[in-house]
Length: 634
Image (cartoon, rainbow, N blue to C red; front, side, top):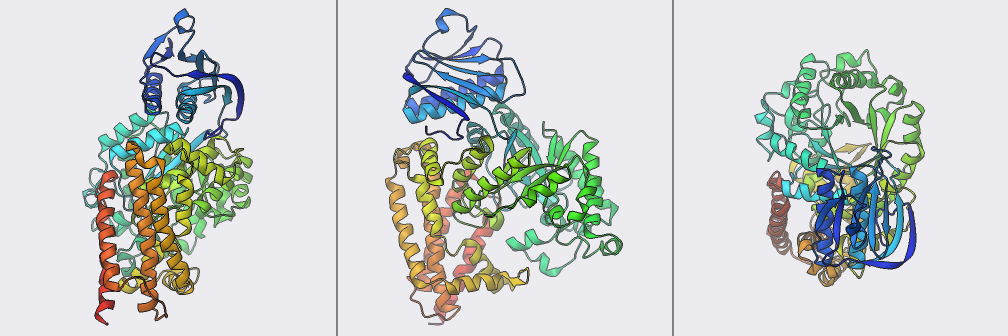
């Protein structure tokens, strides 16, 4: 069956149930408004698939007129915390039985997929299902460039719920309107408190826990570069003060030696946590690169790095625990200071992240051996790229899900980061989001990625050819020189910024990559992008009105990937003196980039607030300036 997530137990039966105009959706008499919202979602999705809007009714299941031609919700009333469900399809009736709101939602979600793929002629089947992970989350970065509109956020929530995700985190640094911090949020398009309250309500209606997620230690660029709060910065470094997407992430750790730093952060948290129903909070505390190197250097003389780190983290966790919160932090600093893991507040949940292929058991075993709670945290691999690396993402998600399950992780949190200005459009993340949901629900689903691509193509996009996601995967293979590579080139040429990572300067790494890729490889990638665009235009999904925005974003990404390869040919010739033959003159290349940027801005604004779009515009303008300077030398 073409289902994702794949149910744990499926038994096919003879016959089929036909959805017709007078088929009723029938709620159990004991069900409440949350289940009614699930019934409305089911009604809406069936109408999309069949053009038939089913009536919704409510009554005792024993009533004779509910015996046939209906979709019935039945309470088991065994375990109100269980998300398990049973779905039984007979020729006369469909029954969804569950113990709680989420169980009904997930049974309805599976039924929606059966209806979509059969066009309302649903084969008889018995399905018994329950999740592998109790907590199945998705993290969306809303602070490093792109702040979504409320409409696009609610659409995301709907999609997450239909794929059985039950937790959403919006990563925040600067994008919430808080009293007393006007200097910070006035430079963005911040969420209003009432918008977070409304989103929290909407998530609850869709079976999703909106978990607060906010930087409180490192990654505090906007807070700590400000005039009012810059005094709390660990390191005063002029180079760190030059804005680039990478400088934003590499510096700006809070000074733990100043007691007022703790007061500042708890003041932010007090305003923030009141907006959420959740008793959880992710305070991040990752990548504290500057800790002990500046104003806290005196403390660092007497404390090991890990001790200095934990002195702040444990204090902050205790503050929140006294308010009834379950605290989460990213686990990277502890992974790198393992001798201190035993000193961590025992009730903290460690978010164990790794975003590459080849995840090792050791990263889970170290927390498990200390009896600490942990989540497995893979990535959709879209950060700093115009198209996600689907090969890496799917492999990473599967490996992390398997290892997390082996070591009894309490959750799987799939991450969608916005490094380099959130350059990738949101629709490119959908396949990775769905696959993360699939592994979180059923970690034993080992279907090969080609088949998974086909399932997602059919279920999510209604693509009868089942090749849409395969085309996106093929597009990712053409992304040889990525947007991130060109960013390193720009940062060094324009700002003289050279980032040292493990003894390697990143602009030199990008230069070597550009010089080593052959002219034929780049030109072949450009040609293949053009072919992929043609195939996308001919795909079934293009004709679906509700998928128009997603298809537009896929075209845009394909054009952008091609332009990065074309641009590289010019850089190889003009910057590095290689004997290659670009497809365009520098002036023509600049014009192409500017035309693409105009379309990019339009599509950004369709799903996102203006937020930091200006930084992407600035980047393209700077590249075009360099190109036109090349032209002047002719």
